[in-house]
Image 1 (spheres, rainbow, N blue to C red):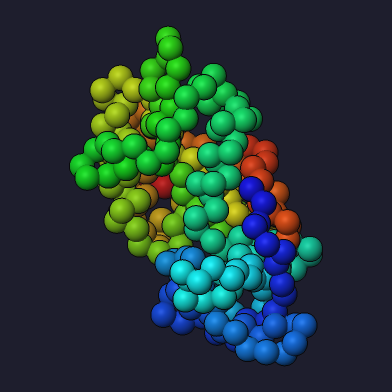
Image 2: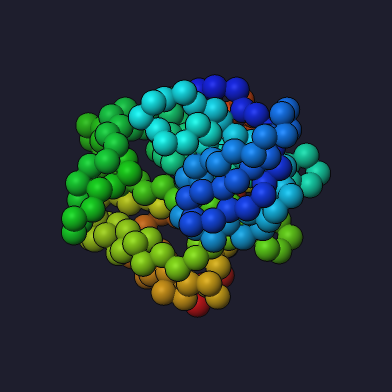
Amino acid sequence: MRFQTPLVPGRLIRRYKRFLADVRLESTGIEVTAHCANPGAMTGLADPGLRVWLEPNDDPRRKLGFGWRLVELPGGHWAGIDTSVPNRVVGEALRARVIPELARYGNVRPEVRYGTASRVDFLLSEPGLPDAYVEVKNVHLRRDGDWAEFPDCVTRRGAKHLEELSAMVAEGHRAVMLYLVQRSDCARLRLAADIDPGYARAFEAARAAGVEMLARATLIDTNGVGIARALPVDRSPQI
């Protein structure tokens, strides 16, 4: 997935009201307000002074002229903060059949109704195969070593998705929870059970019910974000 316009660097002044961020542009020193497409806690990624990258836009339908896309991390690493990016990246990967566990499916349909007033991120189908229901989660929390962790705040909606995926397995379908790690300094995934014990319980129940838990790394730079290698998911009890 490539960004539509070249990104521009700046220094984060503050993030506030969840969806707004004030940034001082490096090129001009001008302070601008950017849209922050992320409702989560963004622990460690919203500290004042961080070097961030914004995507300009001239769409008259948008109230803000910039969207916050990336954070620079120590050691030449990156984190993507836009929670709409993972579905775009995974959608491209599914259609290109580059996720081995799901590469046999040729029909990829996004945002299909299922469960209780929900929409699954992707419904995959192929003659002779059970339908595969795929939910995608954005991951960018890192607190210890090379562990990526999910979630970074309480997500009752996320727990509901796990329950609905379990119901699809009970009906004879495949169900997959795919965690896309949008930072380049992580090598494995585990749950942040201390942040959301309810999600951890739902995760264990779903895994026991047969929901497949996958994690993928990303390749990130100022041109775009792409899917990368598989990452191991911690198999030790999460609760």
